[in-house]
Length: 338
Ligand code: A2P
Image 1 (cartoon, rainbow, N blue to C red):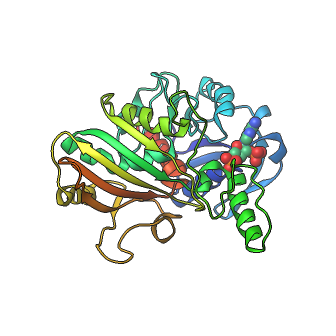
Image 2: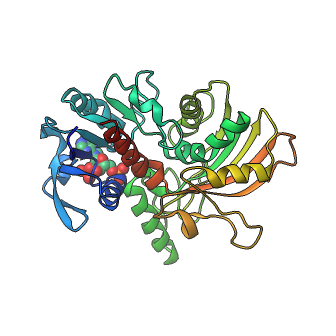
């Protein structure tokens, strides 16, 4: 590739698209031409890129010839239809949807965890993991390498931005409406999200788990390259705008103490440990994660109910590390291949 690369962002008007534009500008990504694409209804509108404004183009009529890297974040069906066309035209596609994540010939990559997997991409497509898996594995990979994780029990507290722009608007509208005694009218979520918590993400599957829960199972195994790891997940949506939190309980093959885990995490790339045994000495979406890059880990403690158990609290901005930042890091790794 030349010194600059031509980039297309598919889904540029969405919540992740906006973050992709911000992060590309912040990191001074070596962009030649930058095309911002969305559906026909947004075409002709503008999005911000640094100090510039870019005109949105219609994906359906866009010619991908000459694009080096295409960052897709417009949902699974758009990816299924268009990502192969961009790859066939010579682009490396980095796809944020779940369309290709479980295909054996598509690498699923967290920049800090399995960057080497990205080189083997026979279809020209690299998948970006689900936001909940992403932050969990940035925190757990160092522990897995040291002590071998046997089982993970995780409950997520996921913000609405993970569902997209309409969900951000729904939380805002419901919250404001309810404070003036109006009835909540759920549209994006099946029940009221303001002042509530919803134990449901994605669709229900035959085994009683939801698709968002099963993503944590499959993606953890694929990224860590270990099908023996047991994962039991409960996904919960909470009335938070940006930043997912996770209560993670794990059992390791070899005993690892809290102090050793803390020391490992303090050295781990992409992780910031916030773990004081005091008021506010732990990360939260609002105080730490929202708008920032790291995966924050706190409440690190040995599980008093299991001899090889460890408990952690993991918080990160689901739109940044959980989606856009990792996609840009993967693009940087592709460029570094030369
Ligand atoms: P648009 O604004 O034109 O609908 P979010 O997840 O925040 O809702 O964002 C979804 C992104 O995917 C938006 O940029 C949206 O564009 C884009 N998108 C949705 N459907 C299509 C489509 N059929 N073709 C191109 N872009 C699409």
